[in-house]
Length: 254
Image (cartoon, rainbow, N blue to C red; front, top):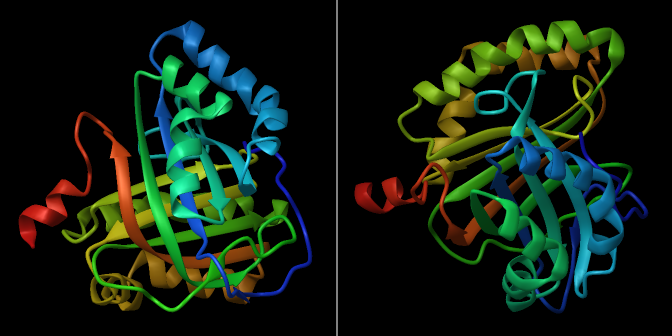
């Protein structure tokens, strides 16, 4: 489940001059029933505050599925906020101290924010192209984000394939972090994963298996009414997830 965001014209990819866009993806884990109910209510109540946050562009309030999110069963403990910002310092300040984000941090048992630089983007999300891709500025971990609106007639076929794809990603020793979040249960799905390099990401994408077969099925069956694929350079993180920074494993193997 995910709230409405800023919308606009839908070019496939935007290349911009001026300040480099920063994308933030903040994950929050809630403990008590009271805090989980608060987070669920904020899926609606936080929209006005987010829209009024200085410097924010496109934004989404998202829920997640059970486990690592790759299931249609809602996880009442984990929520996420994705946002775009014109400047990196604005992203860091507002995701830490703006009124909406401060309320989430105060309630959450744990939070982790990833800061991202878009390096490629294809497709649309809610009718707009939210990510302003620029030439890749450096080296280090890369993140991949996919977002799709699943046609109702294809929902059962899609979700039957997701567990095998999730297991395949989990078995890959290169993946540092993966999660599935969502907008509308069953029909909207976002996947997010972090990899040590473009080579490791491409190796997974090319490998024959559940992922490749699912892509072929999507194309031949016309499962999605809207889709977006984006790649980002990870420029920083803040906080912890499951008690640690998931990217520490990449530093240890470097």
